[in-house]
Image 1 (cartoon, rainbow, N blue to C red):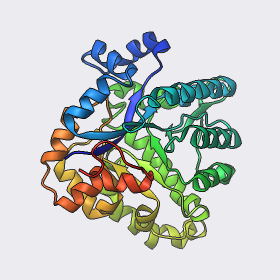
Image 2: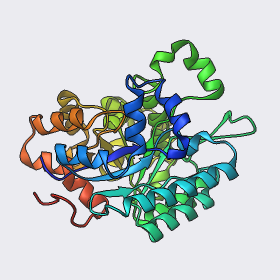
Image 3: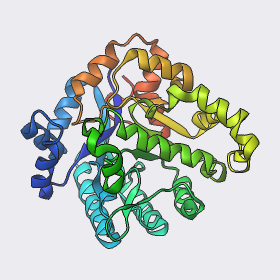
Length: 338
């Protein structure tokens, strides 16, 4: 399929190459290639895209990114630097590349102001945040965005009509020490990423974020971070137990309705037709978006799988590009109508 849109595609700042190399050594079997690909913007990833039928990519700063910086001033300064850098880079190929804003999430008003700057000045397509923001004197606190304090930020997202991609980050501090240190091989895609993001999104559901902001759009990667597979059980306990005990005060609709109106999932890093079919049955092809998770995953693995998957033409086009074209209000790009 030509003209696919991919939107969980990472980049790093070249000045952090030493740190990027160290980080890659924790998970990559080819550190040199990973560092070269994640630092590239306009050459290698465009070549991959041309070869595998990806017409447009929305780039985001690599995890854990600014969410790993617990000093508010340092976090905001780095976010601004990243946004200015990627805006200049993608301007060289505007019909092939877009960007998500990077934000410090220490302060709701500051985050809202920087998001507005990125969307109105640079035309960014939304924002990607790496789960909770580290905070506190030792970086051991976690800021969630599922309470009323963050309403000013969510209102800005809806006013600008841009989605937020809630991406995972690695567990840190005492959470890592207590839960993951003795189970280090479960950190990341095997378990910890899904656990963090699913907790955060379901917190938004149960704490009324979507009821207060009914037009808000949230994206979850990796085919929904396990949530679609528990949809029946979540719905059963919310509707038949928890709402009778008080949840109805903050959660006005069903979990299925929130997924139908407010939550999207992507195929990033999860290239299983069996799993995709299950998610289509639970949340429908209307709420699924193609993505790769490059360079942590490859264009070849993602695109070859998707192009060969047994899907009808309508659903393939929806997932591959048409849903994203509508969500991000995209104009023409390479092979956008092929």
